Image (tube, rainbow, N blue to C red; front, side):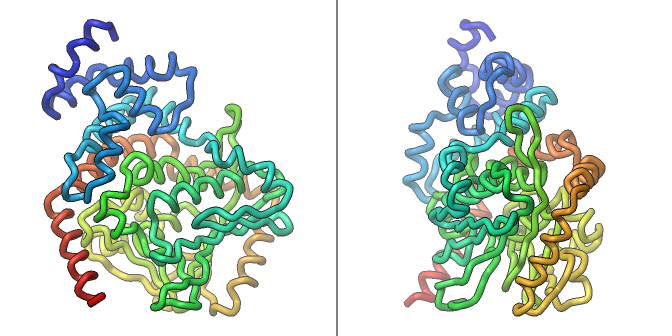
Length: 395
């Protein structure tokens, strides 16, 4: 792209239609320049803010996004929509999109920094995640206590760090994810897997589109599914999830990338994203092959709930056990998944079910559709009604 093109760019993209038109013709060239001819591997936030610096007006600046985060979701100007337009076009280009997705499989900087400690101590305590290694198995316990393990920017960062550590530590052969014991009065003393997206943080404008909404899909969820790229070499390991109480929304989406899911017999899963007005991540891509086409539609479009003690439980999990037997089942599953051929077989299953190109082709329109939903009138009204109900319940 020439300097003359850059100099007139703010006038040329005064509307989102013009922004789409500009990117439709230049997305690959922009990505080529940002990544120095594909020689640099960059995370999503680095990409969008580098574009903002090199082509003023094409994407919001760090300062604009920082200012947005001081406002409630309903009071924002919607600069994140322009980030979604940019990333959607980059992902839609096969060469740029593939390189972008592969770049998100790099180990994060916090994980690189904490790796020596984890290798030495076999334990790391993050703000919302505890990670511990015992006899070749890493146990990742989610502890976002205030929000029943609901997902938000903070938990997303901690999850990615912990997952990277599991994949980087040579002594770990299998990763296990389980919700911790809650302090919340309603579930005090009980384990909870996940309550989905943190709607309180979303209402207050604290859920980042780049770093969380899209970042979790192409970041730590994809790392569980595909592994890391370390020095250009893939590193992947099998994963187990143990579900206590419930896996709602994003929690259920998380289960779709695991190799083995163990459910407590009084737990359940659901996808309330339709009621919330948003898209349930990559569930629309993955759910049909997990539970079948009709069941997927009942979950996605009808808000169905699937209990672990129901007839369809083994469509979404591998075994259902009483709470007292979960640790024993985890140990048995870990022993099975440590067999030498597991990694090769999970890789071949993934290549058959969801190669990276399939993922890219879904991620491109998803990036745009989801960010638009985050700022749509019905979602903002739904968040306001939910917030008013919570306030009334506290009185």
